[in-house]
Amino acid sequence: MERKIILDENEMPKKWYNIQADVEIPPHLHPATKEPVKAEDMKPIFAEEIIKQEASKERWIPIPDEVMDIYRIWRPTPLYRAENLEKYLKTPAKIFFKWEGVSPPGSHKPNTAVAQAYYNSREGVERLTTETGAGQWGSALAFATKMFDMRCTVYMVKCSYEQKPYRRVLMQTWGADVVASPSERTDFGKKVKEEMPSTPGSLGIAISEAIEDAVKNDDTKYSLGSVLNHVVLHQSIIGLEMKKQFEMIDIYPDIICGCVGGGSNFSGGAFPFVPDKMKGKEIKFIDAEPTACPTLTKGLYTYDFGDTAKQTPLLKMYTLGHDFIPPAIHAGGLRYHGDAPSLCKLVESNIIEARAYHQNEVFESASIFARTEGFVIAPESAHGLKAVIDEAIKCKETGEEKIICFVNSGHGHFDLSSYDLYNNGMLQDYEYPEELIREAIKNIA
Image (cartoon, rainbow, N blue to C red):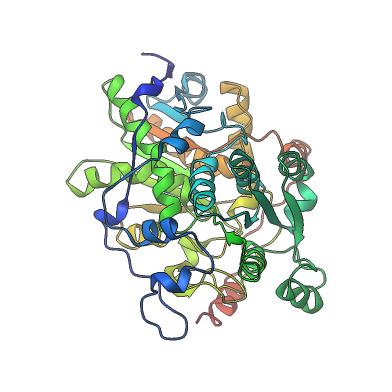
């Protein structure tokens, strides 16, 4: 069996898969009326085509040629078999990973960043604002906006701004204006700094700042890197390629794993396989999150705001509350209080299983992977890898020869300070206390 499975670029998917054609997802609600949001409600924030895709029930959405041309810089991405990891674990399982770290920003994020920048530029938008946690999404949007000659402002969560300076440098190299959040740039940022001067920041706060900035400027729209339906749609190219690659070697995965912060990476890899499961195919989906931000494993499945300032529509999701501020763990991209409504619906329906892991066991998995397969992966990605290793060890115990695959969302080259802490025994585990979760959930709308 080939260790590296590569598609020809002519075999790249020409359409995105839309999970809303097969799964009924609760509508987003207007916070004042509690009625489903209308297109005009979102026009101050998003491009019109993005709004259409957010509500679309069409199963297949054509990928524009202009987007395909940029995708071809790094897509299709390879599917690897992790033979050395299998030998290390002494497992009969066959382990595969879809490697999204080959994109210019080094993660899966440009799959949607390029699409969003394209649709906005076509409608005359000159600048996009956004938030970023660990910096993967901000880097992707900085790259994508440069491809379409647009400006970009990124509100980067303060603790990540300080922990990951090279992500900031990467964004700035592509011309983005990067601001530590909470900031003095927005009214909401000033308010948060006044009330909580030592806060590490959160994605909810950064989203609020980015939306406020966009709404106040006529030439500007907001761009989101995860959670919403159109983002998950664009990421489906990952799973569609995986399906073709597995077909090339005439096998089908038994288990698909991935990390979850907002859900775009895992959903992008898993969703194209979900209709197979709904038709009776034996396949298991496992999403992995940090114990420090346990949305899917300890959150409440209800309607909540996507941001701290309550500017977004109400989303039906597993949430820890829009006021939730997680500790400054090193998987900065997984520090969000909620998750994609589409993913949450599938978790609530027991189609997808959620697990939570501590930092040290995640970094242990990442170190094993680096020493067996050679790739130093992002702390976020390593959560999905931890689930893979657990399942592979189960196979060792039972003797089952399962096919296990995970979506390896990006490289960890800018996360070496985190690896340094782990290597020197200085990385601390953190499990968010139940009483603080209950307190945060009290304030849900």
